[in-house]
Image (cartoon, helix red, strand yellow):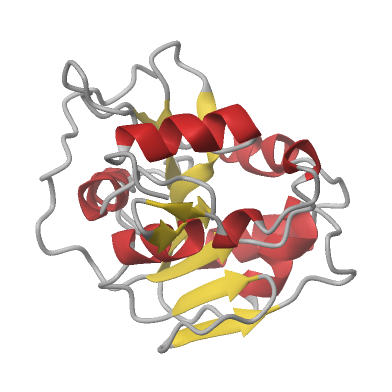
Length: 213
């Protein structure tokens, strides 16, 4: 399936009802075990920048250590630090909306428009044949799926997770055949799939955000 490259950051100004799950409990080994979700970029912790992109969600669930983020529901995976699949399972347990957006906590340049484009790409439940995709996932310029940046029909994702015994998000989400969404990136703009895995990534993000930590 060809990526929906025409899906821009301003698409779907009024998104359908959805909840959001932000995974923020990783070990950050390439950052020396530092508190990556709490690292400042542009004057805000990374996890707060990501939460701002889903500010119109009915419920925002952060899977990770509790923080001072009013209006956000916190939960933990079992065991803590057990990986993205247990973290998703813990977050989904708190989701009640028909759609859920899944994001990593280290994506400083994801904004609301990207989230709305993903939601707009998810086929409506019950529309057309049963084999329709049940979600949409961001793809980068090389067509690689960004499994921690997507939107899904909640019931289908819960069913898939309930039957899954592996540890890979790709193994869980790939078979669901999500719609690929590749937003246009203007010259000089930082793409939404830019994540902060290393010290160099974090330094580059701060520079791109105006030089502020």
